[in-house]
Length: 95
Length: 431
Image (cartoon, rainbow over all chains, first blue to last red; front, side):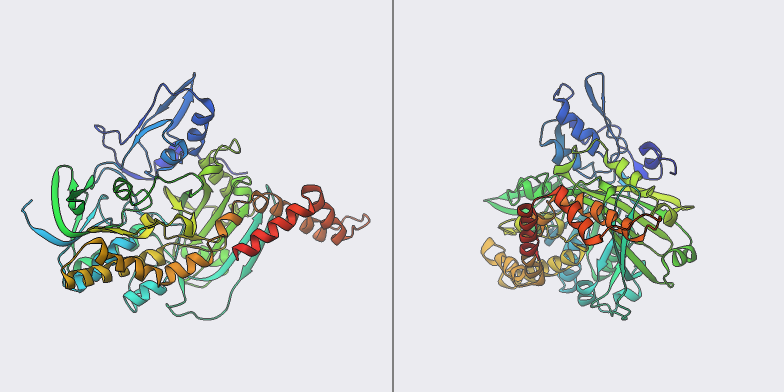
């Protein structure tokens, strides 16, 4: 079996214009239901949701803007979801 | 910005939006297209393959100059277990013209090209702007607001994709539900054109489409896909959102699992990864289409209207997107002639869609999503196929088993006659 490539390495292939001043996705950091958190952690293609020491964390840097977390969480972990401002975020060169 | 009022504002520079804008400009209407990405295509992802009949109708001969990758001449479907793979490959051998052909495609390149065509036709392009909301006056959509900047038009065409927050705000569409959408996760891997030709036994300009059920998603509803581009390979997995969490493997790990499958790894080995992308796919089919595709001063098309059909062996959305954009433009041109952009006049769009292949095809397969909700297809079928194939081809000097008996036995272990009959009924209903 060939080696597994980490998500972080894969995000490195992409062109991003990260908007440091605006998080287009906001999560409920106090959310505690482990089963719901687990789903979002497994779902994010960019691996941006982490569950450590009983806390869910998220960074919008590297977001592929798919919307999966919003749909999977049904408003439970993800408090608000929007597209990044124009020109910000991922710029796909292949697509 | 000035108080200038456009005939139409199109939100979203994907295939639906570009087509609508292109058609309106050709009819000499003043049309503004607003795209949130740096350029049209920069936020767009496909598996992907485009069936070209609707593009060909829009722009005859387009395939000669458009950045399409390879004409698909080989269809491969595969059932996979952890190590096994049963592949079926079909080639019609016929030379399809562009009214029946399909091509592998990379959307960033294709949409960028299409946007240039639209601009040449007279569309005013505004990339790099996010539309925050539609402006409403007296219950009618009259324009858009983008970061405080207001722009007005007789009609707004929403082609803002699967995550169409704008049509949700207007109440034209409900929030997506997990069973209605799948997440697609893809890598584009560069390989020499000649290497691809050899690995897939295809000529220059011709290519293979591979769709896989079973192991890539560990039996979750969904599957793997692989498309040969000119000098790269698009490889990915698609997984229905309601199934996420069913197994303890993440979406990105499913893609790694697929890439490392013994039957897949040799196809991509030595390649250079170029990009990693993800996108939602509306998969709810006919029943997911919004009840009304229009309201006063506004229309909705493409993925935003959920015009996608997933049959497992074929996934279509782009040909629908192009057609819906064309029909939206047709309705807007009529509304302009009548000088009336009310819901009543714009309802012509709904009529045109209902009379088009979009509706006919989506209606035909309206029960297909029900079939694809059956986990047996993604678990038991690939496993039983693998066991039968293994028995069929393994020679080890032991007493051979009767294959039909073995097959019946394996099926009986997993299901009851009633359940099997039920699955057959669902399948018949779907087809």
